[in-house]
Each structure stands twice: as structure tokens, then as C-alpha cells.
Image (tube, one colour):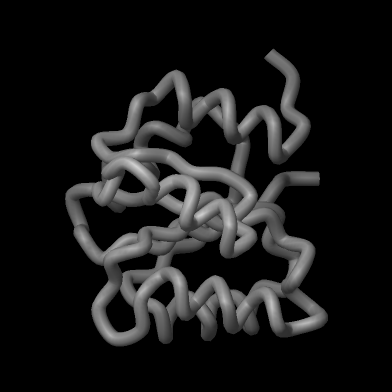
Length: 125
């Protein structure tokens, strides 16, 4: 079974970069460019295995998207990794205290991304 991953990122260059980084993994990749689209794509794909969620999104931000997902019984168990350029002291702790499963700072380090993908999707190697 192929894992399905949702990448939520409003910057087209970053979205392309993350998608390209994930090519070595055999994943079905779904993308969303804002919070509303992220919620819609989640509704359309209830079998998502992992969400990479940018925090600074137009419309509703990543924190609000996260809160809406976690209060929905169908999605509350999907691991969500916060992806943010706002990697200031205390920010990671704040996001983790809200219940995010993990945190990746931008610019994204490919090795850290791969480690998280392997960990959450239980992929060997």
C-alpha cells in the first residue's frame, strides 16, 4: 500500500522543492496552497497517512487548520508535522504544546525531512 501524504504550502517554489525531495519515496502526494484547500483535500482523501503543514498560510493559518483537523474524529489520528520559517526560540515548543506531532524548520534540511518521513510512515532504509 502506498502512503498518501498531504503537503500544505502556499509558496509554489517551496511546494515544488518539498515534492521533489520526496521523490525517492514511493508516495502519493497531494498538495494544497492554503488552509481551506487543505481541509477540502483532507475531506476528499480520508486515507492520508501524514500531513506536512506550513504554518504561515493565507486565509486560515496552519494552526487553525490543525485545530480543525484534530477536532474531527475522522482526522484526529493523522500525524501532522508543522513546517515553518518561524523557527524562533520557543516557537517549536509552542507548536508542540498545541499537539503537533513534530516540527521542521525552513529552509528544510533534506536529511531531517527523510528522517521524519521514515519515522511517521514506518519506512525502512
